[in-house]
Length: 421
Image (cartoon, one colour):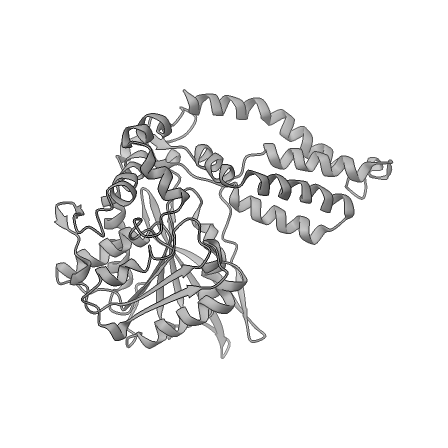
């Protein structure tokens, strides 16, 4: 019933939200006589704040249409390479103008960015993708909101996640591919490559694991504590709800995005309240640059998706409560996950010094598990002063982390082969 009540609340708030949006425009539009009345700026700011608090936040676009490198601008095209019920594999193709013919820059090493399926959309990695595009052919997993997947498509489990990653790796071509996993997917990505190695399949040239819960027994954070202090049944009974009838996935069991968003905000409520107050003040002062920065951040932060219940509960059990991967006890579709089977894939782990989601040591634990990878092919980077998001987005990512990721990939790149069309 909670999901249905949430939808009723949204419907009840909708007229007020539309009214606030109209009020903000009436008191701020240059051609409106209301914008010349005393206190118009404060009225417009108040209305917009109310609008942004009450509005629905749809999935943002990546919006990467061009890239500037060394003073030259390169067009970028987003292509869907494969569509699965719960995920789309996207490719960002960067082009150069060569003798009046637009050609793809084929000499760049291919990179698969496995985005987290943990509440936010893959567009949260927009900065990651845009930076990687400078030197690489970039693919990314674009996970589908579970409420938009008809129940007839069946369940989606953590095992299915592993299978998706393997299918994407095979499609792109493991012999030349480099895989970057950010946060949650470090676990299923390590499982996917481990199983491929155990079967004798070709594995990617390298894997870069960033801020992920490989072994949550290392330096546990508040997120880890929450997952372990509650019994497994609590998560199923309190966080899993049915999708209402007004969505294609009606009847599907999910961990709703609005509950996840509430959890995100609850971690730092004072900071979010201050941010909204600062936004109001910026609008009143006419500081449009800071106001736009606030809009961009919350357009992304407030856009959340529903997670399939089976996948979410698997993650709670396998990753956080039983730590099956580091204990060597995890089986995926009847096959034991053995990271020691990986021998030809180089490993780089990246952690933030101030990460309060995946504590220091949790990602680095991959080195102990991947004992078959030669020491010369293993590297670790701890980013000083960086929190969780700073290792893959923002200034520190672009200036400190990316150069080392780029150089690591270059050192372990293979001769180029023909890629899928």
